[in-house]
Length: 460
Image 1: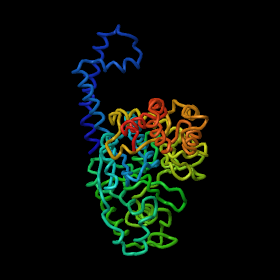
Image 2: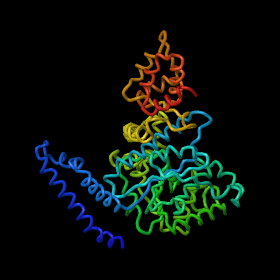
Image 3: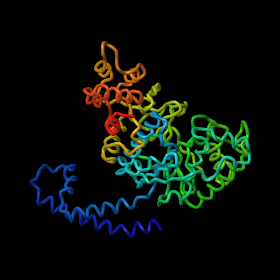
Image 4: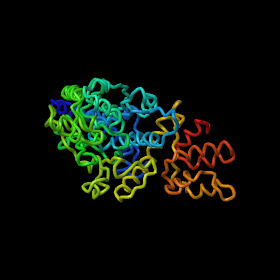
């Protein structure tokens, strides 16, 4: 059927392009003396077409884009309200959301899929909805469909509160299995944690051999041998099969047959986060009703954590996406990149976040800070155009820096790439005490940091 629709549209699309090509040729003939005619310049000429020709060109281009299969990149954010104070990791998470947004847009011209962006929020993270919407994300707000006390095993009902990174709330990733929650016409969804770095176009995760026709789930292994499925990088096809899987998995969860030393029903899942996603998914798709519909993808290429002998030798240019955990921790937390592969992945992230600041935090959000309470967020990374030792010397009196030891050490050890929250707080305080330093202080911070500092008038 898809082939028939494609064949039916081909003459129309070809005719459309023929008309546009003729208009372009006539226009170029009429302006042949305007300048050089190398291929790159000729390709740019449609920008100067008449409005009617440009409209037709845009229409045909949009028709071509519409032919791409629709897929999505999705994230689940459990907490987004930081009323207890500044939170360095949360700040970096927002930076990486911007990188994900920027990368999807950058890859769009060369990708074979039309990729949408979906963010799943809860009542504890819905304050992020306005910001994510401005960045082009489709926001869905959900709550747990069940409570821990519904689990018939009292011990497991107690343990799921704290197992893994966020306990029972990890189960909310299963909401992407439900077409009614996704509420978008997409073939497949790449579900990633907010510390995943999309480095290269990722069409291959939606296609065979990673996602054969019969597959409902694509997954990678995790940090340890016993972690058969890592919940930070999953591909799911939301359809009637995945909806049925969703209910079946929750039935297993309610039953609570999780055994010490072995996991779910004595088969699999005795690992970090195994009482929820990272145990239930391998049980269901390796031993349960979903057996045969889960497909393994290379963790070295798609979910590289630089923590296994298998993945450490991988060349950086081969890594499509990496996960800042395990053996390569989060750059925004000033983590030291000990392994050469980790250093390469970290270096590229900082390059990508610099692009994202221009793409997302500037133009897409209007160049300013989001509405309260997000004004309290602060990013303490230094601008790449400044040197930390210059900052330390400039803001000092009698040889003693106004910055605390912790902030100064962070600045000096990561001259252009630091995420120490204390640095920003101290900068805000210094600007209040010494107004004459205000502009100089601002120059040491990134575009986004300056926006947040200015929006808050340097006040907490």
